[in-house]
Amino acid sequence: MFELKNVTKTYERRGQTVNALNDTSLTIGDNEFIALVGPSGSGKTTMLSLLGGMMAPTAGEVLFRGESLYDMTLTDRTKLRLKSLGFVFQSFNLVPWLSAIENVQVPLSLAGESASTQETRAAELLDRVGLSDRLHHLPSELSQGQQQRVALARTLANDPHVILADEPTGNLDPDSREQVMNLLSDFHTEGRCIIMVTHDQFAADYAERSLRLIDGNVDNAPLKARAA
Image 1 (cartoon, rainbow, N blue to C red):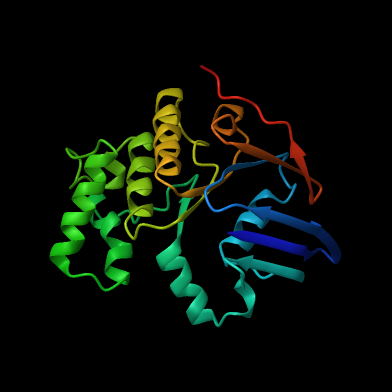
Image 2 (image 1 turned 90 degrees about the vertical axis):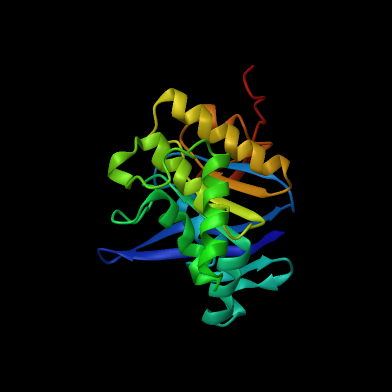
């Protein structure tokens, strides 16, 4: 699925070079559920951005299904993100003036689906995440947990094989956190690859494998079984 080959990513900050990732090599399988854990500034979000085709490495290669992401044209990489990759963010990234169903329709519209297909598919996905009674509510009329479930429904709109989640439980109460993680676990059971950045040990325990990042270096963390 993904392969990082000797990937380094550096930034220039206040005249100094900061290494976000240091000569990192890593393979992620087709149907893995991986948690990227580590302290702030350790390179977790940088790695997620590299895997998502949003940030080119300074050195090395990022391969997706054997093809170099950053040797693709920008247009081809954008098409790949639309068709194969889904994104979930801590801040939900919902369009505030669109209803729940309209937010879920956005990627379907970008993919050129008809209006009727968009509406039917979006309604089905919102029903799946338990929000069939909130189709026409604005984000401001929803709780944070409900907003994240709208974001999860939107992520599934184009049936991506990979979901990249950046702190998906970071703003949620315990009940909502469990709902979101159960949904991600369901998506994985259906055959999707889940790659999740998290500070939340509860969330990390859902993963099959943990990768610990410290100062831009990857270390395989011991696998922790999910609590009963």
